[in-house]
Image (tube, rainbow, N blue to C red; front, side):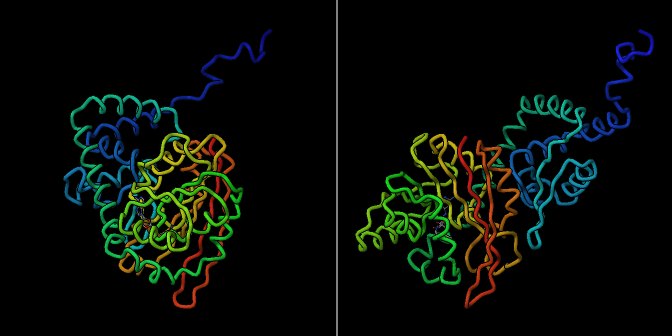
Length: 329
Ligand SMILES: C[S@@+](CC[C@H](N)C(=O)[O-])C[C@H]1O[C@@H](n2cnc3c(N)ncnc32)[C@H](O)[C@@H]1O
């Protein structure tokens, strides 16, 4: 049948491989430093200083390569006050995907890959130590400090999402146990987890005095002291902005949740309240709920939903807050 679709030559129907795209791919990936950077930024969102620390390179060199990667459309950046954080955004063009898979496989066999992974772990541990030392020194005084957050209504709302008595819930980054106390009063079985033993001591004393029964465990959000599928719900109330790698914590939340279990995250939307770094030891100035939703979806959650609330405080102008909830698939 002359002129039918079946007679058309395959190269006329399939997408043409653009020589220009290929040249760009190979040019960008031809430099080993850029491969190292992409491998790092695929794992973790990093500031320029952190990339310099991991690679042990000067700012001029790191900035030049980051510029090339940005120009090629491979990086997503997020601005926080004076810092810019970069993340490798997987390219949507097949040529990029295929070439990156080959480059990545070959780099994984290079001893530098292991060296970079160790250096990255040190940089992330350094982030964690900044917030840990803040809470270890603050301890029970946190209740006074947190009075700037006039967030009782929001918290009650978070709890209302999961009020079925008898469920087992983890309150990650429980602090002085304010949320844990409310959950326990509603008849939930609560495991309060915090990386700071001092905060947990304060929580134990306060809730013990109130006759509330909560189990306390010291541990990190990114390596929770919980068995696989141990809990029905995970709450993370105002803790994400203290985590060295918030994205990684979601994979851990998925691990400890039963299938169909819930994650409930409450935190600030992006803001420029720099005073929080100094006065409250925060690592991140808020999050775009769309990023949090995407991280949850990649970690194995579905039916992800967010709401944003204005928060009013009599003492301080506060950023708006979001509540994101999702189900473990
Ligand atoms: C802002 S307080 C919030 C406490 C509580 N959720 C509330 O809303 O009152 C943050 C808590 O997270 C804890 N934290 C910080 N980094 C953590 C981590 N990596 N893993 C677990 N807890 C962490 C701190 O020790 C602190 O108690």
